[in-house]
Image (tube, rainbow, N blue to C red; front, side, top):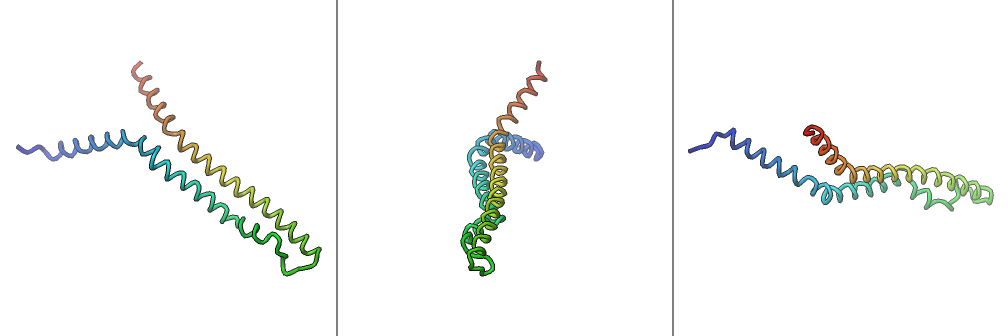
Length: 125
């Protein structure tokens, strides 16, 4: 005797869907957390590259425009030092935003589950 294809599909979809729903928190805090962590580190590196912080630090003591006089070197150092400070602040800001996103990723699953439980309990009582 053959079962109707629709019931087989429905059974498979429900069983697979429930399995995936149960395994979601496990994936969230293992593979997903690893993925988000490395993405956060990559974001920090990209922020540093975007602001060109490494280039400014590397050339801090190199005179601008080939000006080798003492005044030219002092002005060049001052300008580059100020630029490094501002670009460092930009890199730090982007990094802090990335780490806040990582913290939200870690916190959101329990908050979501707690919200669902509270809503279901409010329906029952």
